[in-house]
Image (cartoon, rainbow, N blue to C red):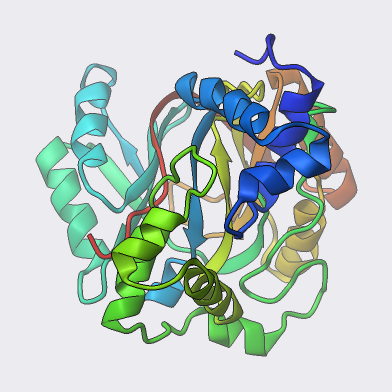
Length: 341
């Protein structure tokens, strides 16, 4: 899918996946920085959207800040029942990622539920409806890193700058104020909910893509940008950017590396893992009698061999040699959670 992308296409992808400009004429701004015409920038993005290299350009919100609860769920199905079960699970609007993976649990998905709803009850209902053999709820104990970024020019991971909701971010001692704040929902007004509904939708590929959003909200574009800035200041919105289809963007291998880390080394090891530019997410999760892996690192690369090399490098850096790579064998769903729908 990426063989026909030239250098300017790749430089453009690097820009829009990091921080799409929240200004009245964002495509003109990007054109100026790349030495292109505005129409050329739009013309380049259009086929990347058509080929689903670029899935969506919209706001990324913090689920917990909006009062939603979220969790990773692992389920096991008979192979012949997996596809049908995955499609049933996909119907829930709070399911944003859903993958078939190798291993004892062959379906992994993230689930978010609205304020007042129960994650546990929702998962139990899903398991009963789909006939899951067994399932595990895997909430986050420690959140060391989130920083999805790819260098499309060099074709390598670029998650060197990242966010730690628990306040680690390369530090051995968490920032308690950040951690406590992360788990507190921010009050949002009815108007702010309307603004979330607008900003979470894919933008139109036209010179002034925010004009329609502002008009529907009954405000000016500058007021819309001010509202987005306020969301960021309050931690409600992380950024406004593009989401790439990893495989179609050339990063065809997706490995969830799971590690067995001694409790006394949890923070030290988690911080070391998070500093790999190939690791986009790093969490600590609970263990179970049939599941003793504590730390999860998401690795996206151009080949399985690179994923394995990254995991070996992490193993050498941490001294943790009890790990598995769970590769995604099928992507059933990957999108952003849609809030207040």
